[in-house]
Image (cartoon, rainbow, N blue to C red; front, side, top):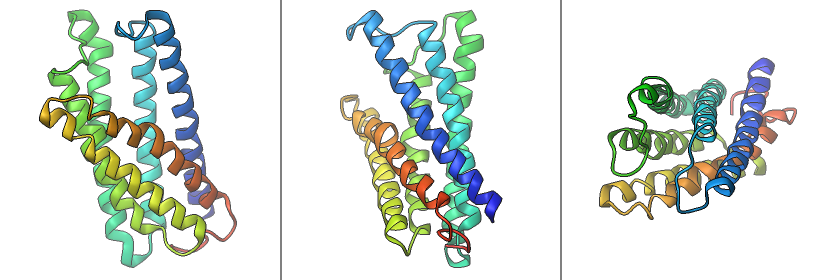
Length: 206
């Protein structure tokens, strides 16, 4: 259990760091082209690579959460990991395609409406949202675990609400989802890192 806890801590910390790096790259990209023009390579390529890395960290984190779940909560852990794996598969496929064949055939558009962008939003809004919502009930007991539970539920709910944007064709509403996975999820990971780090917090199944 100690190695599992350590892996969970590293994955949580990794997601926080990746989130900060991604935000910094986005700010730098906007400073280069302004708000009215899309970010282009090589900054865009870096953003896509970072996204793929973050998806892998999410799968590792959800695998750890599944492992530490109590027998009564294990089903939630399995569902969270399953939805997280689907999310990672979708988003890594999208970005691998755009980084390779997409750039060679000039098919790299991640602007609405586009097929690739729809798949990307399915991954981050729907499947990540479901994964986080199902992961939340696993954390019970201490105040720190309660914070982790509520923050995961809020992050997942915001991701799911972001689906309203593409469904209605109003991408301003998609920003709700961005708040979920871009802000609320890293905050959740801060709480999760503390849970995994503290002695006794997950010494036995939660």
